[in-house]
Amino acid sequence: MQIEEEKTKFAEERLSACLSCSLILFGFLSERCSLCGCFVRLKTKLKSESCPISKWKRV
Image (cartoon, rainbow, N blue to C red; front, side, top):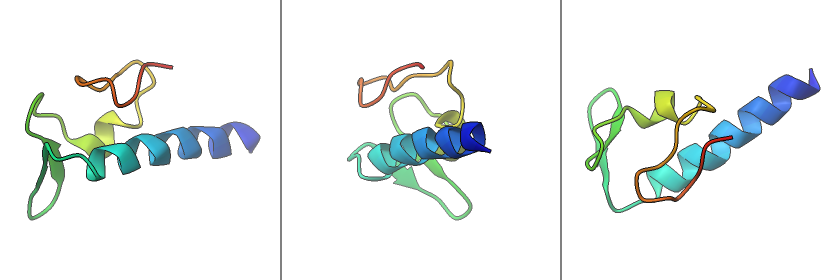
């Protein structure tokens, strides 16, 4: 259970950074990064991914 809480916390922190970024594009069904084109709600959950402008790093 603790592992799931940690996983959720790291994803929430990353998502928060993305949603407050000036490069975010808000769409009808999703939010995307205008720099790399990713769907931020998905990308922020992947430990192997990182932000293209270093707002968050790989885990």
